[in-house]
Length: 298
Image 1 (cartoon, rainbow, N blue to C red):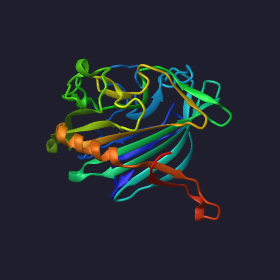
Image 2: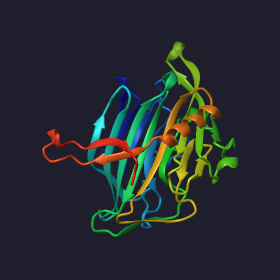
Image 3: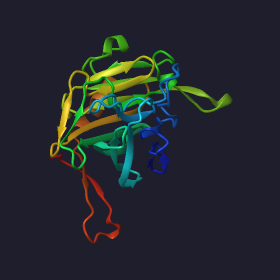
Image 4: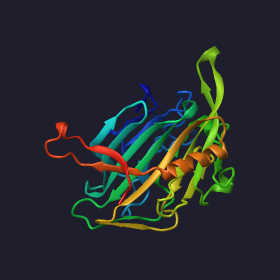
């Protein structure tokens, strides 16, 4: 996804991967603030930068790479780059180990420019049972639904990073399992090569939206460089036909250390923005394109 002709983000959905993901997610310096895999564990290849997953949907593991359950892109709704906003919208299907679809998921991702070369990734996901299925259960689990694996240098344990939540708590031991409006992971980033290298400070602030059920969310965070809004940490959630679940999140790629005032302002602006509506093509429209526009959700 490009803003002003510069790539900030890339979407991967090839069938060689168990589920789609975003990588890289570049910071203001142009260096990725996320990574693939765990810096110190050989069994975390499922940690792919920024991704959608859940450990239990109808009791099925959609989280690890040890399962045959898969999340697949069914088709594009819309994709466009721009100077003021870049938009990606797709339809995903969640399939059990026998290939039966258990859940559909709309994804809308909006990349927005911000002052001082910063940018934000606004993500809206809408989940519902597929056609012919009456309900789907998001079972209780710490793992899901939007996860972020930060780069090694941002990690509190492996790098020089710091985790801070909206309430001012710092480090995993003070944050894990607590409710907060947002979470921030900031730390050093190496820019340039060889003799021209320099170290700057950047980070990602991950916001929960006030309209989300269970707001403010509980957080699953780790000092090794992982954070996720844990929607199902303490309870199941049943999604029935005709009553989809929509969740909105925002990832702010910022320069400098975590700034409480800046985060508060970003959260306030995010809270006031309408969500996204996906409009089906009308008969006779040129190329029959889907439109993605902001509007108040049903």
